[in-house]
Image 1: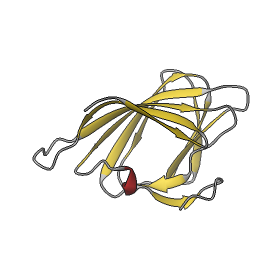
Image 2: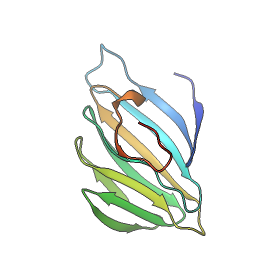
Image 3: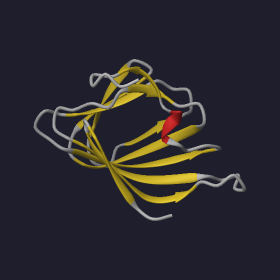
Length: 121
């Protein structure tokens, strides 16, 4: 699959590599995610995938099941499927991280948004 970039209200993501086929039991996708200063992704969960985030640049916070923790370069966050999560960039810093998705389905429609400051469902 070819790389592509999607712009979101909070920043953007780039799909770096994707191995998501019905014939494959070991589906994975790698994204580079950029969160603009002061912006936040929706509070969400996924039914079909786990995520692993590795922070590469900037500072921010990650929320897992209502608990916030600080993010700095080198931080690794593991998010099992079904876990409520979000991420936000500090007001003065762009936050960049690599996201590895693992699961039986990796489509963008596997996002259940619980709360979203941009009004998305």
